[in-house]
Structures are given as C-alpha cells and as structure tokens.
Length: 151
Image 1 (cartoon, rainbow, N blue to C red):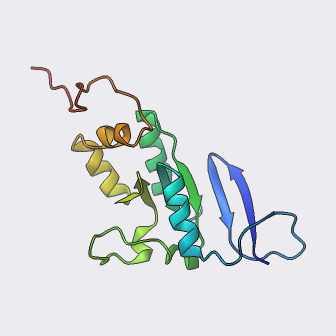
Image 2 (cartoon, rainbow, N blue to C red):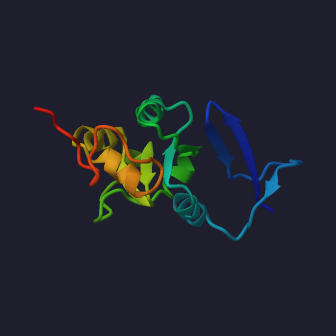
C-alpha cells in the first residue's frame, strides 16, 4: 500500500509519495496516480507552489506573495514527481523540469518565478488573487481591481 508522509517546516508541506516500510503515516488511495494527486491538489488550493526541496526561487515566490498578503500552499516534489506537473504553456511545450518551481493560481499555471514577477509588475497579480478569493479588495486598486495611478 502506498503511504503519504507529511512533514511541515517553514510553511512547506513535504509530500513523500513513496512506500516507506513500517511507517505510521496516513494511507492514501494507491490507485490515485501522481498526476491525479497533483491535479487534485491544484483544484483544492487557490494558490499552490510546486517546488524542489530547498529551492531559493520558491522562497522568493513565497516572500513576494506574503508581501501582498497571500500565504500559498507549498508542495515539495521529488524529481520523478515533477514530471507529473501539467505544462505551463497552452500548447504543452514547457518541459516538466522547467516547471519547478511552478505556481498555480485558481487552478491555472502562472509559471515560474519570472512569470510571477512579470504578472506582479504588470499589475495583474493582485486582481487575479482577488478574483480567486485569497485576497480582499486591496488599497491602491479601484472597485474594478485596476491599479490607481496618481498624477
């Protein structure tokens, strides 16, 4: 039977999808594939980051989101599990190894750190976070969630 071990430290949930011997961890549905499990996690969490262990880019992503007031779920994946991440590009052209870390907002893959920063600098990140319900109306934005530019 496949087992799920969870270790929490520094707001990171570590999911180990291997079958440890003599473990007292939580049982999971052995029929659920890694891909299915990742899709379920994406659908259950409005903001989720999939990362490798000790990834500095993931740390920067968490800090950026925390300064806005959002605390994402962070899942650390092993190398073989990263290949189960859905592609960021609509045409599926991204390689799985280029997806870690990958942030999903409202079930949609935003991409990696560069994409998240670009979304923030363009003024589209806060409205997207408001749209998925993880952030209330934010100062500096009008009622339509557009940035207020003072003259």
